[in-house]
Length: 195
Image 1: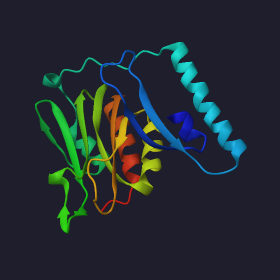
Image 2: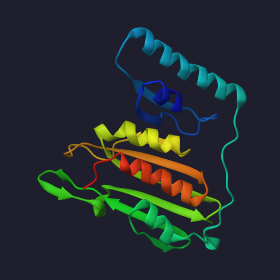
Image 3: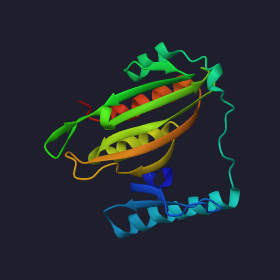
Image 4: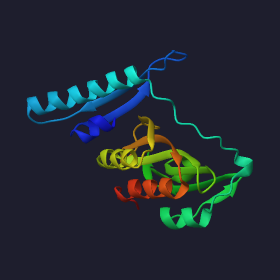
């Protein structure tokens, strides 16, 4: 994904087609407009990266995180992200709502139109995962910000149909120092036009 984004391509979807496949295969959709030679070069760099990953077989990032022993500084996370959260069962969770219209009714964060981040671990090493609700023009900026901070994209898809404005959802997952993860999330949020 970073190879595509860094070379001027857009990433428009990320998902699986199969269950129980081994090795796990994900499908990433890309697009771009411009000179054919530049586009071909960018796609070539994506294929080169895919070949390198297959060849090098990098290890999956892993952190031994026990939510029962979480010692995060939620106040600092909230200051960085700009939204307070709550600690429950060892997970510090922040939820930021958005509002859309569906069938003539306003629908918001309580119905799942939201961005959320869940942190567990310590300030030195934490896991963050969550969802980001985006307008279509916000997708590429959010992807670039998350990848620049080392947070992995798990999927890009829709959660509903016939909503206005159209929402795209992104699931993400990352490991690292808590404040670095929070700053990366803040950078992604800064690319959006939140209510």
